Image (cartoon, rainbow, N blue to C red; front, side):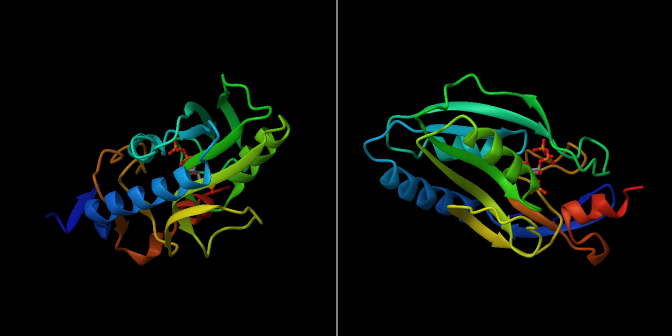
Length: 195
Ligand code: PRP
C-alpha cells in the first residue's frame, strides 16, 4: 500500500486508508438507514467534493430513497476565499415535506453548510439531517449541527477520496494529509492568501 505521495513537490502521507473509509461508510449507511426507516429520504450531494463519498454511501443505504445534487462555489479555483457562498446548481427535487439528508465530504469552517441549511429550511422539509465524511472540529466557526460524522480530524490540509488539491487528486482512494505544517488547514491556507 502507498504510504506517502508527492503532489507538486509537497509530501502527503496517508491519514485514512481505503479500508477504514469503506468500513466507516458502511457503518454510517447502516445508522442512516435505521433512522430513515419508513420514509423515502432525499439524499443531496454537495458537488464536487462529495461525489465519491456519495456514490459509496448511497449503495449501502437500504431504504427507498431519491437523490439530487447542489453545487456551490465558496472558494472557487483560486486559493483565495471570496467570503461568499454562491449557488452554481440548484435542486430539481421538491423539498417541502421531505426528509432531507445532506451528504458532504468535509465540514471545515461550516460556512457552506450554514448556507445549505438556510437554503433547505426555507423550503420547509419534514426533517433535515447532515452526514459528512470529515469534520474539522477545530476549524468550524458556525454553530452548525452535524448528525453523522465519519471521521473527526485536526486542521490538516487533506486530499483524496473526492477532496482536491487545486482541482486534482480527487481520484485518490484514500485520504492524505499534507505533511508540511505551514499549510495546516485547507481553508486557512486559502484565507492566508486573501487580500
Ligand atoms: C469544499 C467541501 C465543502 C466545503 C467545506 O468545497 O467540498 O463543500 O469546501 O468548507 P467550509 O466548511 O469551510 O465551507 P469547495 O468549495 O472546495 O468545492 P469542491 O467541493 O468543488 O472542492
